[in-house]
Image 1 (cartoon, rainbow, N blue to C red):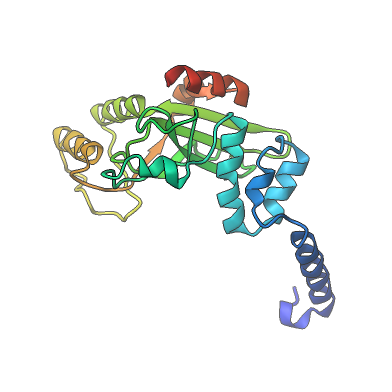
Image 2: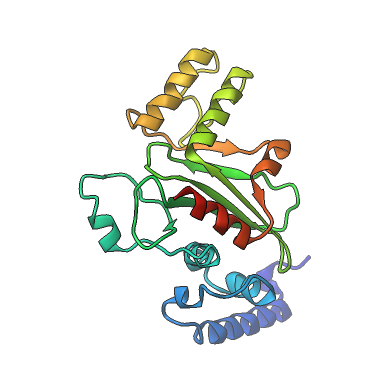
Length: 229
C-alpha cells in the first residue's frame, strides 16, 4: 500500500471530498437546533454524520428532546434554582423546569455496531435529574431507545454490588480497591448520590434486563415521561 504522501490519486479524491463537504456545511443553519424536528431516517442520519463531530454531538440533544416533545433548558429555567450547583441534565418535558422531576440526562451514540454496550461511562448520580435516556442510532432505519429513572438505576447498581459486581469510574482505575467490601461499595454509591463524593460512574445495562426499559418509538417514551411529571 502506498503511503498517503505518495498517493497522488488518493490525495485528489480527498481534496474533492473536503471541498464538497465544506460546500454542504455552508448551507447548514448557524443554529443547527433549528433542524431538531427532523424525523429519524436517511436524511437525519446523513446530516448527523456530515456535521463536524462536536456539533453533531451537541445537535443530538435538542433533536432527541424534540422527538420526545420536550426542549432544552434555557437560562430562565436555571435561574429559578440559584442555590443549585449541579448539572441540570440535557432536556426537560413540560413548560417549566421542576428539578429532579422533569429534567433528563441523555447518553447517545450513532454506531452501527450490533453488540455496542447500552449505557454510559460518565453518570453523575449527584446531579438532580429524574432519569436517563439512552439513544443509539444503528443506521438510517434503525435505532434503540431506553429510559431508566434515577431511583431504578441506583437500585440496579446496589443489586449489582450484592451479586459481586463492582463500581467503575471514568476518572481512572485504582480509585477503589478491588478488595473493597460490598458494604463499602454501597457506601461509595450513596456518597455519590448525596454529593459527598463526585465521581463519574459507569453504567451498563444487562442485555436481558435492558428489554424491560426499551421503547420502540419516541411517542411511546414521550408518553412514559409525561406520566412521571
